Length: 272
Image 1 (cartoon, rainbow, N blue to C red):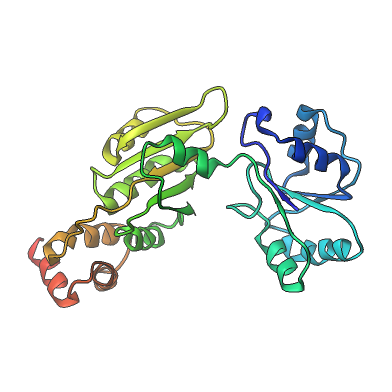
Image 2 (image 1 turned 60 degrees about the vertical axis):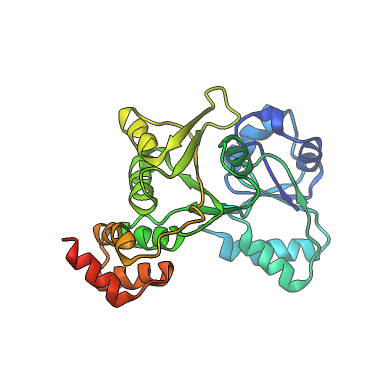
């Protein structure tokens, strides 16, 4: 079983989670120290075996956990916060269990993705989760170029100390006026949601230190996407600033914006 754990407020723990933490034969935890703090806060006694299962050992631990399930053990998988396998360990275990036809179920609960989306004030009827953006500027710029025409609301995660450069990258790729929201410390005492255009959010992040877990929600591209080569010059320059070669940047933006590479290249040169 995959079980969601509270993302901050212990009051969000479900009765089902509490019961399974007590009764499961095996509890696989991303961080056993955090599991210990969780069960202490919930007043639960774990009676089963506790196994560490994280990104650095999941390849070797997955067969061991599957063996336990085959032998009849009830396995509960938890991560530090939220649902396992969503920007957390767990996918490899699920993939292997599905391949073998083993029974799986999920215990729903708190979700930073859905909480941030609901509080953002942005459209919620269609959305996509993009997790953490690549750290390398060139790779990040390429990913954002692919998302520049995404019509759905987008949800990202980011570390607080990398929020400012992330917002700068979003502003360069999507434009200063694209609406967005930064949600920090969701469900906790100091919960805060800051909403506004990307430029305003970047200025807010520059004005002071941002602390706590962060989710960033960005509105999708407007229905009337630009079609002239000149309208895409800014996107090309953003990719170049991120370290991409001119030729590759033009090719990426042209494919995404459905414009001629030759005409776009000429427009970029003319704008210099």
